[in-house]
Amino acid sequence: MKITIIGTGYVGLTSGTCFAEVGHDVICVDHDQAKIETLLQGKIPIYEPKLADLVKKNVDAGRLNFTTSTKQGVEFGEAIFIAVPTPPQPDGSVDLSFIEKVSREIAACLSPDLGHRVIVDKSTVPVKTGDKVEQTIARYATAGSEFSVASNPEFLREGSAVDDLLNPDRVVFGSNSAQALSILREIYQPFNAPMIETDINSSELIKHAANSFLALKISYINAISAICEKSDANVEEVAKGIGLDHRIGSAFLNAGLGYGGSCFPKDIKAFIAIAEELGQPFDLLKEVERINERQLEQFLDKIKEKLWVLKDKKIALWGLAFKSNTDDVRESIAIKLAKELLAQGASVHAYDPKALETAKKFGGLSGDIHYYNEPYALLEQADALVIATEWQEFTSLDFPKVKQSLRTPLIFDGRNLLDPAMMNNLGFEYVSIGR
Ligand code: UGA
Image (cartoon, rainbow, N blue to C red; front, side, top):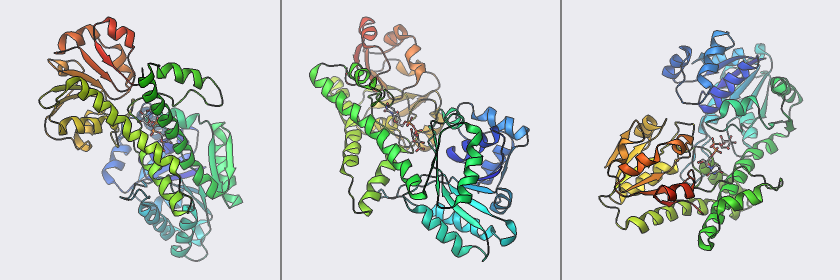
């Protein structure tokens, strides 16, 4: 199949590359000239495991190409995927202006001679956006142009995007056009995954429902962690005990500082706004958000309880990314934590294996913040070490050396990465979440 992807962010670039990897011919379109030039040189603008090699392999094989021209993209692909940002507005609802703009741009390139085009929305959008896309394209396209519209939400996680795309649990697509469904079936046939074919509204809703449910699981275990702390129980034992019931499942039951990133915080807010607009308020999700916010507040309280006054304290911070295996700091709880510590007058000395540069550029941290390229130097005479991102690397560091460097052997582990018994044996005062 010939496929066009409009938007080369995380979702667009990884999807396009994986479509090429399974044998389709792909062109990725982006307005950002510098980004396209970087990609044409076989380099990628983000850190995502396995992606750089896969881009290079498929560019070299001639199956993956990049352009800034929407016209070239629309002429090339029988299926045109939209993968542009759908950021939140101040009231939590979704800003669909990029989707609307791309719909008009595609429409302007359609013509009766081109043949049928299926326009597939991959960005996370409110239910019924497909209708709007269809109306917009119909309004702006030359009369007689043949097209259909479909929804195909993406479930990849940053940090494991390539594996998630090549081996998905399921593929979901929806359309009211039989032709669109048949094209999508053909595109996804090489992935050997269960395919959920449905109507366009259900397909759109599945994405918000899935992300909200996962966020709910995280908030649920975080709420349990607070109860464990009050009752001398251990949240990890509780998570194991409930997770082995296959109706519950053990994934996404890691208690910690809460969820961050470019998806969950925005999607939960969006789903609350969508439900409100439909006249069906979703108070459960408001509580999911509230628990998420409280998780960071309670962690900060624990730090203050031990250190009393934060002003002029030196805090060593491991982790800035919103989760491990990514350089993404959007809505990172680690960054929020650093901001709070700085606001209270602490001096923050931070290390992250991959997110230092993105944190410097996009983290918005200012004042007494210092960045380090390795995990040890920042510990020198620090009053405490705080762990804020679940990088596996942090579990295998030299803790006797860590202890020697710190002014007082105090560790706050916001991701339950380390073993409490081992930390206590090494002589640390060790504070974690719900255990
Ligand atoms: C999430 C979903 O998992 C994807 O399926 C979806 O495609 C994506 O959003 C999206 O909408 O684009 P992602 O944001 O990349 O993926 O990251 P997750 O692995 O889901 O983690 C989100 C946050 O939850 C992170 O801050 C992580 O630290 C936190 N988390 C995750 C926990 O606190 N506990 C857990 O048990 C799991």
